[in-house]
Picture 1 (tube, rainbow over the protein chains, first blue to last red):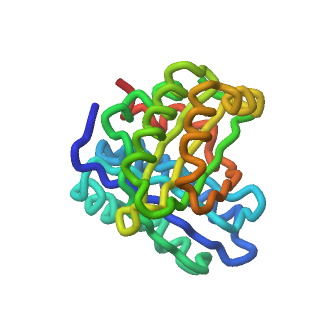
Picture 2 (cartoon, rainbow over the protein chains, first blue to last red):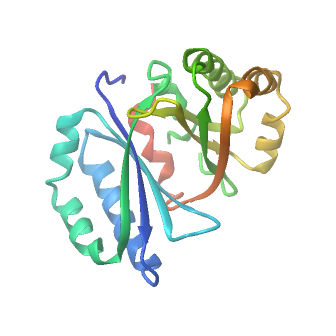
Length: 113
Length: 113
């Protein structure tokens, strides 16, 4: 499936000290619920820097802006957001353009089940 | 397919002015050849910042370090590397850890052909 108006973003989150495991649990739960319950959430791919695990990065891909706005209102996103606010030192959202959206449907196919 | 020793990386590339289109053509060709010809290249997902297109980001996922080392020796990578060296102002490579590798095979399945 190819989406014409995809919203692609890299979120850069810095955690306050002492919350790493707790934050990861909440993020895992949120990412997994979003992928399962929301058709418009194409990808939430969470990572942390090996050298500095308090630096989290998420690659987020939504089918379109409507799918993203709808995501912000879901119970699982609100639980994550409200549950992690006190753990977050800074949050930066980078809007990205995919360089080759035409071939993208194949790009992740090696990971498909 | 689940890989145990995946190498996950975010490459952050800043282009010198005046090379955007030319760079993108070479990157598209390289990413596409890597995905098609190398089983161990799980994902090369190239993006640029909407607000500042000279800032390129790539999410790169390799099956393991061997797959990555092998990638560095391919003709298509060497063509890209040697052909773009003079366009690049800075290059930063961030080694990442995937936060939920177990569920990852499903994460990109909505984009599978």
